[in-house]
Image 1: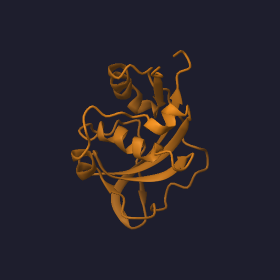
Image 2: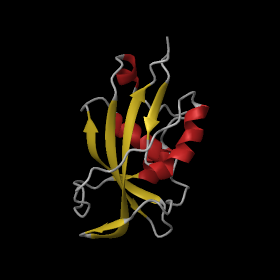
Image 3: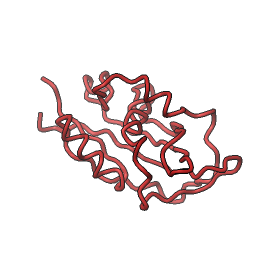
Image 4: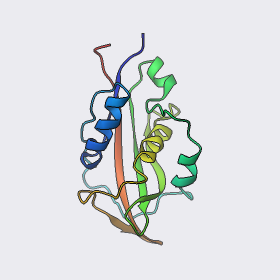
Amino acid sequence: MKAKHALALMLPVAMLASTLATAQDQTPPVATPLPAGEDLHQMPAGAGTDMSQFCAHLRVPMRYYPGHARDLRIEGSTTLECALDANDRIQTCWIVSETPPHEEFGLAGLQVACRLLSVRAPAAWTPFHVDGDMRPHVRAPLDFRLNESH
């Protein structure tokens, strides 16, 4: 039996993601606040993922919930940090955290971000700057939860 599943996204993304979730027979997402006191001014490690290249190679339709985790009924979360271009659109993203590890929730989060490439960052996203990068950055905590009704 195929389980219904849902994502919990940041509030500004919730309306767009709700539309996407409904199209995939998922329940609408719920806002997840950023952890209090987190230092947002450090550059994430690594070069990051060029989202235009990453998204160009994805199959359609995308499945946001990692298959292995869904089959084993594992819930998880990830936090992405994304740099915005001059038009306030997502350009580069980093997987800052992923729980539990090795279940591909970070990769699933990047796939969710692909749906936002053509969308200007909502005013509710609070951009911040990091040392060594002139682009504004935003953080997106994403929770992946299984719907117990099916």
